Length: 282
Ligand SMILES: [Zn+2]
Image (tube, rainbow, N blue to C red):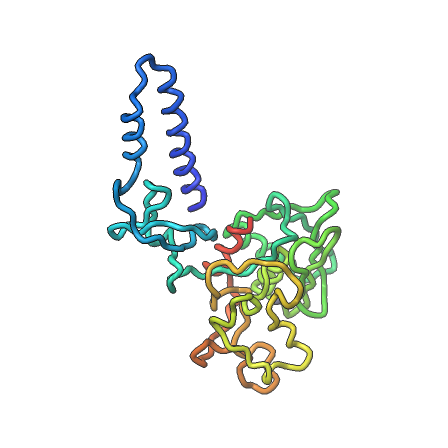
């Protein structure tokens, strides 16, 4: 939504300039060079003032803006609210981590549900949740060659992103609607939040407490061989984030916050960070 508002603003600014220019050409008395210079100068929030250049994030994209008299000024005359700009200095919004390749074209995921899968409402409810909270659309597959089949599995699992051809989301009987939302997140290209490249800024990984064979679930995605982007800052409330005791071999935490404290796992629905990451990707 913010992206749209911003695009409209930017388009209006550009279009306004273009129509003014063409209008000038048509009029017989063209404004003098001085007047034209003043016109352009007028389109500034604070003429003759330059503020402090700051790095921020807008709609998941890094931007540079000027802070002048407490206002956040972008491209000379566009004022952004504090909510719109999450400045880099510790105020970044929570985000998520997404794979660079393997995006679903036009944000459409084609899918089938295996007839043998019990409790199919887990799938339809998870899809409804994604559709209510993201620009991604899910359409029953007819003849499309790239699609997801939801089927019975030994656990809950998915590929990361669109891999081409038929791919599966596997759901054991213990996989809930929340787990299904999580697995769909993987299929859309989301990594586990604790595998972000910048995760060491936010968490400690306690390798000695991880069950043997599951260390890979805590490896940064770049070290797993994936290209990706860390959007915003690590979101402890992400549906893609493990809890402090996930895959613990001994009851001790596998992940803590930097101050050593533990946190809960969330598998109810998409967090603000999950939505913002997917908005940036799709
Ligand atoms: Zn997962």
